[in-house]
Amino acid sequence: MKKICLLTIIIILFSLDITAEEKPFNTGRSSTKALLWSIIPGGGQIYNKQYVKAGIDIMAESLLLGTAIQYHIQMNDAYSLYKQTHNHAYYDEYNFYYQQQQNMLWWWATVKLLAVLDAYVDAKMFNYNEKKKKLDLEFEGLGMSLRYNF
Picture 1: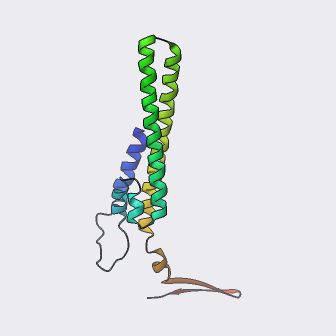
Picture 2 (picture 1 turned 90 degrees about the horizontal axis):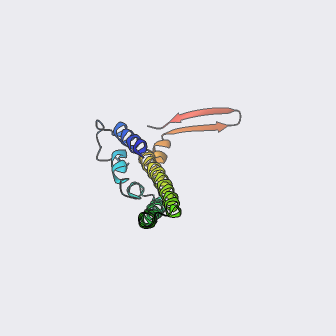
């Protein structure tokens, strides 16, 4: 878990575009803001106006964290029963719920990392279609032409 958190922090720090100036006529999205909004489940996708992706991210993160919390509660209950009875069946149950909780947390971290990366890429590519119109590659018969519009 520490490695994923460290990797996420490194990605955020290297992707901050501190020297870039926002131009008033620019209708694009700031990748830095998208990364920061990604702290909230679905926030980066909402910032990029990707509402379906935001809904999927919110549901996935909520489901994974909720399941991890449920496993944590069951794990604590099993450990309490083990301490009271010293029955190894309860300790095995505790280990099972611990492993399940860890799995859910790893899946949540993976989904969170993918959501952050998705928000970053969407912000960078927000005006892609408008920028793409400036450069046009055309195929005519056996020939090919490249046109750049100013």
